[in-house]
Length: 301
Ligand code: BG6
Image (cartoon, rainbow, N blue to C red; front, side, top):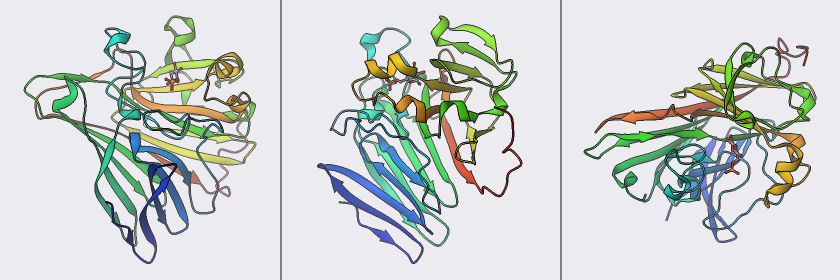
């Protein structure tokens, strides 16, 4: 049983909802909620209370099912398994697996938890996988993968973050300009992002070798979210658009208009090869930048 950790300005508290265990972290007015299963963050409200993450209103909130929204963790592969779908589910098994609390901490500067994947099928049973989550004036999430076995192993992963946005025609990610990407909607053909990305149809792109810092600009909400990433070779941008949204049983029909996934990843052939005792860190931080810092606001979308 996890004990609550509380200091004057921070806390980590375990709660039970629909028989599922959640952790609530708070720090100086910022709040974070995550479900233990999948180490799956479902809500992040920085100081001021605005929700930054999108969760489908008809998401499956059941044991053994991933939640449509928040930050599912794709691990130990991204997308379909590279050998065949019989090897396991799309985006790996971690997002629907049991995690336990390894440690937790709350002090004047931050509230943190470290969660560990409880068990994994072969050949991943010799791999230690931990998710380190820290709430301060930003949110930081890091997946630590350590090969404890005697053989090298390949790991793909993604922090599949669903951002809440005002409207698909109100957002931009300026740093994508000039990047090369593989387009899943066009048999992974390679293109170069010529100008601003336009979200007016299904978007399913793996941007290659992205900069470590990108910004999600939202003119409708007049906000900028700064996203720093590490350990990733790719940045996936996904919006299912009308037809795909309708085909998913857990995606509310109109929801595609108010979400955009931006996912630091080791995707497609860019899996990480870990030799025995080697470790890999995949992480991101998300920071809502004060609306008065409007250097970016006014950028043409
Ligand atoms: C994205 C992929 O990361 O996840 C898409 O690029 C996929 O191809 C989407 O459709 C959602 O995947 P899932 O398994 O959560 O429905």
